[in-house]
Image (cartoon, rainbow, N blue to C red; front, side):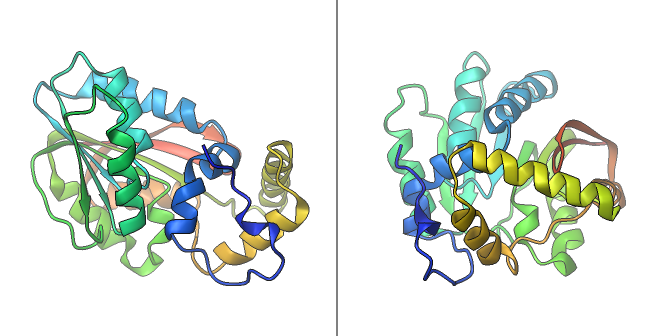
Amino acid sequence: MNEDRIYERAEISRDFEFNSEVAEVFENMLNRSVPFYDKVIDMTSDILSRFLNSRDIVYDLGSSTGTTLIKVSEKLSKMDLRYVGVDGSEAMIKKSRSRVKMFSHTSGIDFVLSDINDFETKDAGAVILNYTLQFLRPVIRESFLKKVHGFLREKGVLVMSEKVISHDPVINRAFIDFYINFKKSMGYSDLEIAKKREALENVLIPFSVSENIELLKKVGFVHVEPFFQWFNFVSILAVKG
């Protein structure tokens, strides 16, 4: 696993992009930037084992380097499931396909190069949307989630993880500070943290937990509940009626 040192250089000032440079270090970046990243994947596997049927298809929209599907397929190897990762970054898809060849149990995983806004499917057993919605423009999130709802079969599930904000300024400031301390504990310098925050400022726009839940219910999900939260990161289960 290559170590993420992209923002060590003070001269970097561009917005964050899912390019080849990021793809090469993305696994390290996730593990050092997303608290309990592996635990959320384990919990996602538990949820899917409960709600999926044999021969269901699981779609991961914004699948990046394929880690979630690889790990879920390993956990659920005794179930007859298919997995499809969808990502709009050619570098990420290339990395995913390369990584999947390293594992003997991943014959049921495919990766599709497509803008997730243009992707279409139906009768999915589950859709995974981990740390993806936050990168879509707020104005299109409702219509996008409505389309995702339409992808699912009856009683299909959406597992969604997001970075979130609190509208209480005191709590929000505390959560931000806790997150900065987490990243420092993972070896990031003050410079790296500041440069990445600057790069993400116009790209990653988080909602609050309640705003995400309201959106999911508004587009038709009947059962919606957070199943994990670490300060300003939350994972939500939504079940189609």
